[in-house]
Image: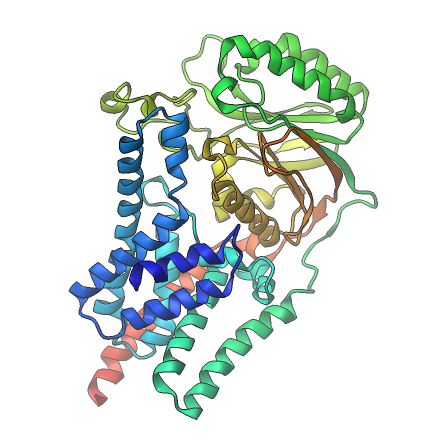
Length: 490
């Protein structure tokens, strides 16, 4: 049952969007851990994690096999090791819950969701972090979405896990007073989200929104870094430019031109000048290296009427840098992917600019970090993220990625422009709603409007610290209560 319970979380997320499945998953998890020993909890937690990550992120197989040139057996092995390794964190969660939390006063009710959130947060930074498959991402469109601008995705995860623990405890008790109590807790949380949802935390900065155009070139990943294919890429972008000029913002995807910035000035220079003349800011992803320098970066630059350069801070292991490079580089093709030797940019970088407005840029993987985006949103009126989800083919990975980008817009109260190589490119409003989007795997231009916003949501101001600190404090208070009062009365 444990792997099935874990897989239910995946069903709650994009592209399946069966959001009650995540709450049911936590209820079943509470049941599985309700009477077992700590040793049994290790196994059940690991199996739960195997079901969760095996169903939710096994799309890494596509990048390892299809684009990393690993054989099928090797790609399967590496994918299994990846998912099994992530599942160890769920094993640790289950052990900690059974050994340290379950017996505390309120441990099975609020201790479970508090510990769950702390482990989601742990996963956001441990070994560079993998903040994927959070419970709260399933709820960008439900009533509790109203809590997102206040508590962020971790707060939504807490509400989901608490709803699950209430369902389990109500089922176990089956007594009317208990049923009323647990139903009341769930109703209060969900109704509270409904009350918060209409609140306007931010306001438009201008009477007229910006006009934007996102170009999705759909360049085949296996050809993108082929030198002989480069002239065709330039011709394709040239052909699209006529429909892009004149928009306030033109957005191209991550590494749109597969050359270093200084190597494409003969092409980008005239394009930038024409954009300036036509009243446009061109924002594009581009590898960047100072001429003669050793370090190079995955970057995004604003040209035309815009200005600014940003280097990606959070790099993807193996895709953008190789851990233990001296031992792994050259071992198999997967450890020699194109542009897998990037350096990380500084944490202190200025936002991009277009006219009088500031734009917070994020490249691919960075948009899944809630606090990184919240920090950028405090100093910008608009969010931009570019990506190349081609690495994950027709799997569920790119659609999960889009769902997380929607949550960032909802948390921060900012419009978000998402430009990708082969989809999904989208204009997302300050409430996390998609205003316009492309399909996947086709060349397309999506155009529309994006409003620049002033003001700040509570989450953009304080980030995840209140929720994480609150969960840690809650567990500490329960522990103190147990040792001060509860243990003596048992």
